[in-house]
Image (spheres, rainbow, N blue to C red):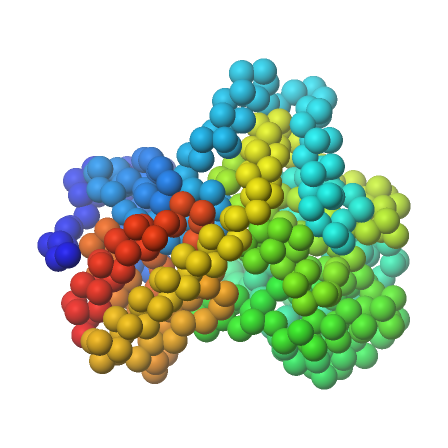
Length: 409
């Protein structure tokens, strides 16, 4: 299939001009498309299944899933029904809705390492709550973090940006991911002040190939936490429910003391969660964390509906099948067009890069060619699959990416 590359539409351009007057930079954070593309639309108006529609009515096959939050497809019927039902009775109320208890019970039943759960609004909230809990429980300050790992966009952990001081991160000590000796050296540096070891399930830093965790590294961090009395925190925010419903390290038999979840918990509704072991129950009760909207009933109802759907048993295998189909198809296309690519990470969270493309110029050109042909993806951030990515959807995506390879060859 060959489609003439469109230019940005009139409504898109008008919205960008209006936004520039009232939103600094026109848009901010990871949603600012100007940071990675000249062709991607900034504004979307609707989504359905594995498709999204921009402000000018153009439809795209979606490989970003709203940068991770959509796991069952846009506007999944069961989740949408739960949202409408709860909204008809109330959302932000004077007391927490009973759905919070129901969802916490289901989450604890799903995650083997969880004895309790609490809810917040996003991944930054969840990771920050974990770190605060670890410090409260241990009476210590130092936290080990992997160099380059993203744990949120607040001063204590942000990777870049003005307005962050050395004092904001003075108690962080960095180690190299999948390098156990470097983690042990960092723990030695912390000494008796080591509160926590913070780690992602895999290395998913932007602008680099993804790197799956070495099981021996994961087991080594678990042993290091045990031997030092530190709390092992798994930042499962990006990988939530896509690798394993019980936690992303459950397949390798390593369980954290605390875990942070967010992104697809509620299939697009704003929700984060923290789970922990009984030994940290008093620690989390001793801290003060809250937010006016943290226990909003609508996102919690969406979370309950999402997890109920995921627990039916075929969600993770379905995403894995779709991911393998996509990966095999892209590999065959690259070979046919004489292009060398790297595909890394788990297949349900794919990452594609071009060999020798240090400045991502080729990846950017290819991503722009893809979006111009109706496939929404990113040049240097991992993509996400959902259960809405059926064989027909993947095949339609591959039909268009083949054109994109031809365009940039």
